[in-house]
Length: 543
Image (cartoon, rainbow, N blue to C red; front, top):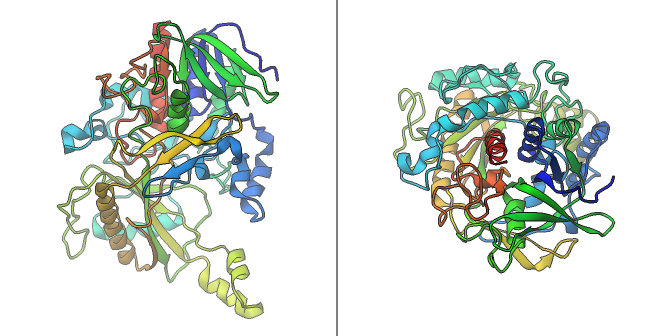
């Protein structure tokens, strides 16, 4: 395609994940001229069956499913815990929604004022009520399938666009045990079609949602990128932005400087700019855009660009039952529990037949009932030393009876957790790569222990022989990058305001999970989408 710059446009959007693509679609619908610059490629939807094959066949590297890896995607990780950045990100039109799980929950009311409510972290400069109408719009845009059966969910003003998926068979096994313990199960909002919606078919059950949905029933941001293009936006792929250039006063961005596959460098000028590159590449781009006005990086007069990096931490437990669980017939989660989200230390019923109380300080906990397959028959056969009838009996004994619970715990924002530049290592264009400095705080570890306690009580009530645990010492990230350009009212303590407009430059907005002040414990994409729609409204008003 022609990747030379367009004439000066109304808005240049950098990144085409859920934030960038939604904003591009909204702005073009308002009649604005929009150019989207995307570092990755434009994937052909007809190739998704082939990509599924790459995932399920062991000869392929997992990064090859979406062409990740190599100098373009180089990074370094320091700190107490290694951060495997590339394991769960995609560069391309649609971003990481090309291979995400598709779970979409709203943050709770208390997530927006953790300092006021819990005495930790900081409050957001907006309330749940400010974002509620945008949550509703985001659910319509993504086509969320859900039900009004969650008694712990925040208030909403209308039903979900599509009916919820029914509970899986393994969910039904949990139900009786949870009932005895006083634990409430409810459905999971999913950004995948349970009915025909938005010219896409209902889910047909491939079961490979992460890393690829061959049918297109699961939402991907490439859908809105295509809608933006059909409405007149120009989507330029394989055009990684190298830096942003500002005017002589340092008050407005003038151009995005980007590279193209032929080795050329171009400048795209615009009246307004929206950076929507996620929680890692967004701060990296700002840091790469240093100048005499901004020696620490663009929009970084606070010194906080890259600081307060957060992720959700996985907590899990599983084992075997003396009955078949019919697991892995679907590739996504259909039941969860938010009962311990706002009050994680609560007990249920009596301590003899319920979850015991804990008076320790905890963060929010989201529990999930997993369709856990355990080792596949092929894996059992390849790793064993039995043959014939003996192997057949081994398969009967070791496959089809696994069950598990998972969950997410949020991190507190800490300044020492950060994304910076590693100037000793460069990418394919000679730019310093992102460096992740990451560790898990003690409050998160206490919350993980509490989550494990609840999980063990449920699994033991179910009669599970617990064989594995993911707890405080072996937890890992859920790859939800948040917090590196946090929002706030005070320019010395934040990077953007409640409009997602940078404090330092009045024509630069950031639409990303990087603006999150706290992480909560809910998957962040719906909040990203809601904030993007809010930012789009503010961009339109400014122009």
